[in-house]
Length: 154
Image (cartoon, helix red, strand yellow):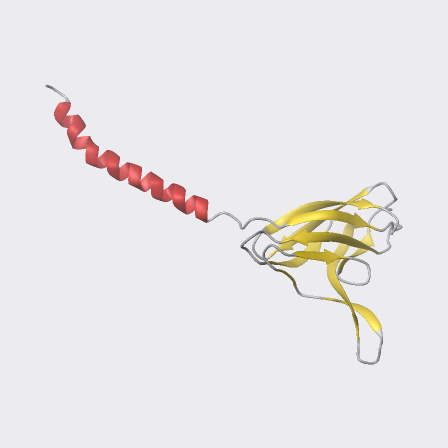
């Protein structure tokens, strides 16, 4: 039968092509970004234009993957820093920026008044109660996660 030799000679090539495609799909599936942590209860205090404010939220790490919050920014502010409130040996309480906030796999870390928080500095326009503030969080493994925080009195 004419042509049957051609089909038979193509089978090894088709098997090889199928194996190559399967390998590419596996590599692409494994090379994606880590699962993003879950962000909830995001809110920030009101602030005048040019002022500073603080933002708060909860971060729940993805199951099976520890991560760390490395930085934050906002199109509505000049700068956002991850801060921690601490008390020194003399009893003085103050806040200071931290380089990273570790998020254990499956655990929840709360950013709240008197503890970890996002310090939003140089607000470009007034943040009024009822409005929102975009926060761009950068995680070590999950990469950038965009959050919208509600502006409310705290």
